[in-house]
Each structure stands twice: as C-alpha cells, then as structure tokens.
Image (cartoon, rainbow, N blue to C red; front, side, top):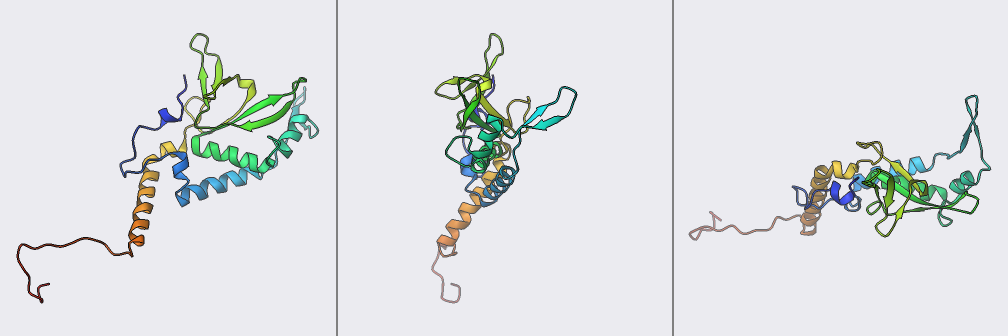
Length: 204
C-alpha cells in the first residue's frame, strides 16, 4: 500500500524544536512566497483540451464539456484560476493534489471538487493490486479522481517537499519564533548575574 501524510512525517518535532507540516510551513514567509508564486504562475497558464488524430497530431476541442468545465469553474464556486492555484498549492506542500470528479448520466464531468491532501491516500487492494483512493470517509476508483503528483518514488504518489526539507523548515521556523520573541522583549536579553561575594561599585 501507499502511505499517507502521517507516515511520511516522523513522529515528534524537528531537532530545532518546531513541528513541521505543510500547514505550519506556510507560516514561514519564504515557504509561503515560494508556494504562492509557483501555484499562481501555473494556475494562470491556459488550460486546453486536445483530441488525438488517428494519423498523428492533435486538435483542440474547446467546446468539449470537460474543457468548458475546467476553463470556467471546476467546482461551480471558484474561478478556474483559484481552483488550480489551490490544487497546485497542495502538490507543492503535500506532494499531491486531488480532485473528486462527478459525472452526469452521459458520462461527462459536471464538477471536480478538491479533497483534503492530508487525508486522501492512494492505496492498492492486497488481493489484486487494484488502485483506489481512500478519502478517510469513503473510497473512490481512479476514474473518479483527478490526481496531480509531484516527484515521487513510484510514479504514483509524490514526495512532500515540506516533509523532505522538514529539518531546514523547522530550523527556519524556530529562528523566526526566537527572533520574534527577542524583539517582543525589547531586544534586550534577560537574565541575572550572581557572584559569591559582594562587589564594589567599580567592580560592578
């Protein structure tokens, strides 16, 4: 089977003392800026559907129901750009972005709804290795799931960049928290110095 997010992240915090998840990493300004910039740039690219020709080549099919759905609003609530910005953001944080696909009776997609990447897990049935998606509160077959994976070990599940860089992210988060605490204290180090005997004024 394929492990979920919890299995990718060792138990406990980092050596620097910070607990690192894709959500907590967004508190780090550099991580947020990188994920936001890449996700926004990719989401702003045009999305087109093509049909292969029998003799080679391809033709754009702008009036296909799937093309119109993805170009306008995959879930009927957000714009296409906002939907893909979130989807790619999931890929950049968790290593995988997932969208549950709904179909009408004719077999055309009517909606694609983002699922929680921290709970959605691709798995294989032990008896026949058939792939399915575990949502935590149900399962879906592969044809009902739009799955975008980042770099991974098996071509199916992407590595979480945050999990792979957890010590570096943890150190940066701890340094940010330490700096904020120091400046919140007036940038004055606290503490008391003691001596075993009384000092004269010039010694003090």
